[in-house]
Length: 92
Image (cartoon, rainbow, N blue to C red; front, side, top):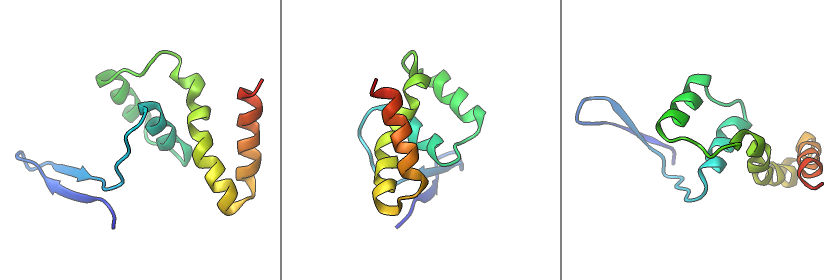
């Protein structure tokens, strides 16, 4: 089951994602940028309307560590090396 799209009262589409997550917003930003990311405009608009905490860019790789570790377990390969690189960076 994937996302659903419905028009709002103005006829604009509204997306409803059934994969609900309640956690820190930086984790969401980390996931959006992990596999290709969105446009620069998306991140600028996000930060404009709901500003992220200072230095969030410096923590970005840390927010990506958990999903990378999951991929390392499931698929191995470069996910192991990428996870190790992040662990080395933040494990000083």
